[in-house]
Image 1 (cartoon, protein in one colour):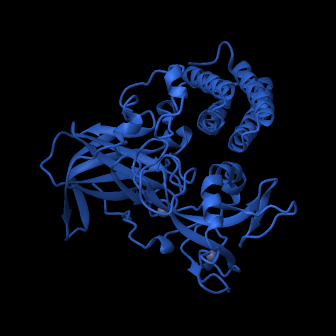
Image 2 (spheres, rainbow, N blue to C red):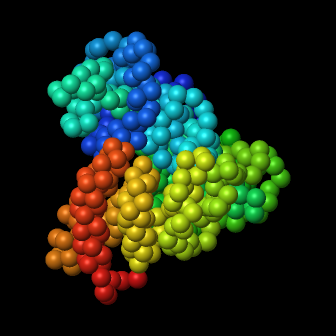
Length: 433
Ligand SMILES: [Zn+2]
Ligand SMILES: [Zn+2]
C-alpha cells in the first residue's frame, strides 16, 4: 500500500535534446582509448571536407543541468551559471562498448556483432602526444600533424537498453534502469548510472525493489493498493523475480529504492513480447554464444590459436566482452587470463586487438578496487597505486596497440603486468570469500 510517487519516464527527446553532461570525470579516462580506436574513423573523417562540423552548442557545466543546451552563449536558465561551448554529435556505437567504436550510420558492432545504438557524444580535437588538448575545431598540433577527432561520452547521452528490455530514467536524473521480461516468466531489473554504466556492486547492494503485477488505484483515497507484488532479489549485477508467464502485452510496475531512506521510484512497463538479449551476428560470434548471465560463468579459457588469427570479419570471437564476476578469486582469475591474452596478442603481433583484454583487465581492476575494504592498511597501500598504474597502462596499451609500435607496447605491458602482480599480491592468501 502506498501512494503513487514520482514516475520514471521514457526518454523520447531527439538525440540533440537528450541530457548530456560535461565530462570532467570521463575526459581523463576516455581520451586515449577513444583517440586511438578512432584512428581509422578519424582518418576517414579527416579526408572528407572538414566543413561538416557538428554545430556549436552552449551547455551548462553543472551536473544535473544536462538538458540545458542553447545555440548561443549566455547563462543557464536553471542555475544561472555561464554556459560553455561544446560540439555535440549523435553517433552510432556498440551498446556494450560505448564510443570505443564510432560510426556515422547504423550497422553491427565489429567487436560483438550486436546492432549499433545511437548515443550523443561531445566532439573535440586532440593531439596524439598531448591528450589533454581539447580543441573545438580541427587544427594542427605543435609537431605539425593534424589534430585527431575525439568523442567523449556525455551523461544521459545513451538511453539505449543494454539487454533487450525497456530503458527508463529515474526522476533523480542520475539513475537509469532497464526492465526485461524473459520468456521463462522472469522479470529482471538492471540499474545504471548517469552514463548508462552498470551500477557498481557496492551501490547495487543498496538497491531494493519489488515488481507489482497487479494493483488498483483508488481515486477516492488517492492510494494504490498492491494486489500482487514479488520482491526482486539481487543475483550478481541485477535483481530478478519469478513472476510467471502473464498474458501479453504484460503490464507491470517496478518500485525501486536506490538507497536506504531514499524515496521509492515507480517505473511502469508494458511488454508486448518477451525481452531478448541483443542478437549478435552469428558470423561474428558462432563460437561464442551471447552471454546469458543467469548462471555463474567460468573464467574464460585461454584463447585458442585459431581465435588469434584475424577472422574474415576482423573480429576475434574471444574478444566478446565478459561481465565482471562477483567474487575476488574469480576476478583475479579473469585478470590473469586477460593478461595472458595481451601477451599472446603481443607475441603474435595482433596489436590492434590488445585494447579489448586491456580494457577488460582495467574494468576488473576497478571492480577489485571496490573490494579494498577487505584488505589491511598495508595492502591497500600497494593495491591502490597498482590499480592506478594498471588503468594508465591499459590506456597506453590501447594507444600504442593502435600505433603498432612493438617496443612501446612491450614497455607498457611491463608496467601493466607489474601492476597485475601487485594487485594479486595484495589479495593473496586469506582474503574473505
Ligand atoms: Zn545550470
Ligand atoms: Zn538519462
